Amino acid sequence: MKLLASAFATLCFSAMVDADQGLSRPDPKPSPDVLEVAPQLYSYTTQLLFGEVWKRQELAPRDRSLITLAALVSNGQSAQLSGHVKLGLDNGVKPSEISALITHLAFYGGWPNAMSAAAVARQVFTERQIPAEQIIPPTTEPLTLEPVAEAKRRALVEANVGAVAPGFAHYTNDVLFADLWRQADLTPRDRSLITVAALIAQGQAAQLPFHLNRAMDNGLTRAQAAEVLTHLAFYVGWPKAMSAVPVLKEVFDTRDKQG
Image 1 (cartoon, helix red, strand yellow):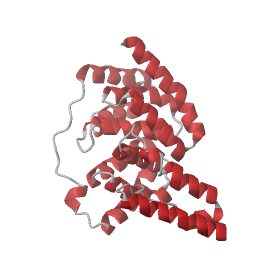
Image 2: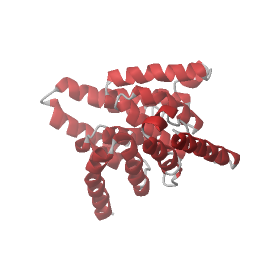
Image 3: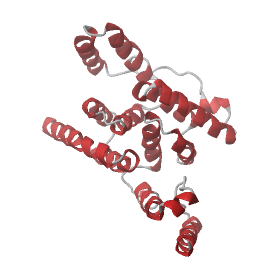
Image 4: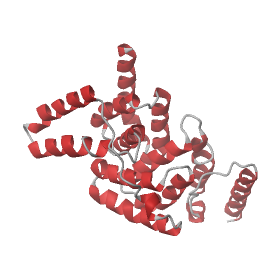
């Protein structure tokens, strides 16, 4: 116990030094219970995950919060969500963007997970006394999708899905893409970013090439895409991240050949 107490004191001192230097580590920090049960996990969490990974320059802190929230929401990990909603707000994610993220991920992670996430977000918004107009901003004109690419995507859905499940094809074309993806409360890059994160988090490699290409068309760079995978390994596990590596390689290689 003396060793654990000493380690805890050292970590607390380190955090205070960082704060004095304007480099306070991101929250949420693990519970002191973790230190008693799994001190090596506590060390990895404070020194590696928050002390190193979250500070890597390849992705902005706001992007890291978006993909972490996407992974937690899409996998239904509500117990970890409150701290990361707070961290996301601190990293510049707007309340309206968190609301839009949860809504978007209802389609990619399922309604039950989104409903659970909404309850957690409401608690955080209430604690921080965030007014309703910051959560639900005024309605704006929908975004315009690139017409040629959208026509090609719609035709593929009709050809591959329409004959099997016409209702599903209808909702895919006329709700998911023609409505949700056109909402202006998230930028196209942000929607692509959280969709890619959700697919990696759920191990949905078959759906990843289309959305990774879309993300890169929407402004995500190759280095940023690789860093998304690196960051998410800590939140979704190494096996899911490893399974996504061949997909990223294939997309990168294909785009290189296409110039």
